[in-house]
Length: 368
Ligand code: NDP
Image (cartoon, rainbow, N blue to C red; front, side, top):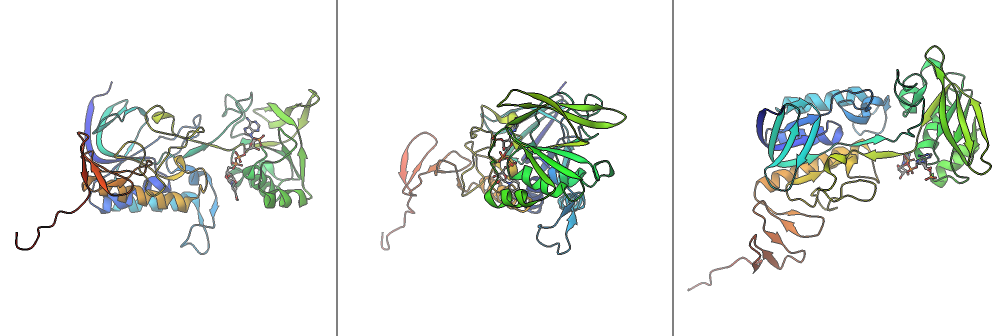
C-alpha cells in the first residue's frame, strides 16, 4: 500500500553515469535531489550503477590514464553524489503521472511529488526470448549464457572453448573479436547474409582467423544442464529450413539495446524504438520540467562520458527551470515554469492564457 508522502524539487531516476552526475550537480546547487534506483534483480538484469557495473576495465573515461574498473568508477560517482547530500532510495517505480506539476511517482510504499524530474534510466541489453536463455534456475543465464563479453569472456569456463555470438551489428563484432582472446573458436550466428556492423568492424572480424560466421540462421534454443552449463545451441537455417544442434560451451547475445522507457510510454514523446526525445539543445522532453539524460535518450553515442555530460546538462536545465528561466523544448519553443512560451525566433512570448506579447524589454524613454 502506498503510504509515505514525499515532496521534492528534483527527483532523478537512475544511478548510472547520467543519474549520478545529475545528482552531483543538483546537490551542489543545494536542490537536495532524491535519486531513485532500481534494486538488484537477476531476472530483470538490473543493478544499481547501471551498465558499467557489469563491465571490467574502462579505458576511455577521461581522467584515468591507466584505466579503471567499471564498478570502482561507479562507486566513486556515488560517493561524490553522497558527499553533497544526495538522498538515495532503492525501489521500483510502479507508475508516474506527468500530466501536471508537481509530477507524481508511485512506488509500493511511497507517493513522491516533484517539481522537476530527471530521467536517467539507461538502456538494457536485448534478449532473444528463447528456451535456455533465462537466468539460472529457469535457464542457463549466468551459467554459460551472457550479454556481456567484457564481463564474462575471461571466465575460466569459456577458455579454449567454442563460443557462439548472436547478432550482426557492431556490438556482436566487438564481442566476438574480444572473445577470440580466450576461446578456441568463436562462431557468429546471424539471421541474414549481410552484417549490419560498420565496415571497419566487419573487416577486422573477417580478418580474424579464430572467427567464423554462420549466416541466415536463427538460434532456437540454448542446450545444456546445471552440471555442465551450456553444451550447444539448436540452429535453424532460414533459407533451407534445416535444423541442427551445434556444440558450444557459451552463448553471448549481442543483438542491441533497448532504452528503459516503458514507464513513460504514452506520456513522453519517444522514437519508434523507445528513446525519449529531447530538444538537442537541452535535455528537455515534451513536458516542461521533465528532463532526460544518458542512454534512455541517446541511441547514437551511448558512452559513459556522454551520459555523464547529459546528466550535467539535465541538472543545469532543472535548476534553470526552478529559477523560473526559460528552457528549450524539442519543439524549439522555450518554456518557463509558469507556462510561458518564448517562440523559436525569440520575437514573442505566449502567456499561459494564450495571449501573445512582444518579447521586448520596455525601456522608459528619457524625459518621460
Ligand atoms: P544494432 O541494432 O546495430 O545491431 C543488432 C544486430 O542484432 C543486428 O545485426 C540485428 O540483425 C541483430 N538482431 C536484432 N534482433 C535480433 C533477433 N531477435 N534475433 C536475431 N538477431 C537479431 O545494435 P548494436 O548493439 O550492435 O549497435 C548499436 C549502436 O551502437 C550502433 O549504432 C553501433 O554502431 C554502436 N556501437 C558502436 C561500437 C563501436 O563503434 N565500437 C560498439 C558497439 C556498438 P539485422 O541486421 O538483421 O537487423
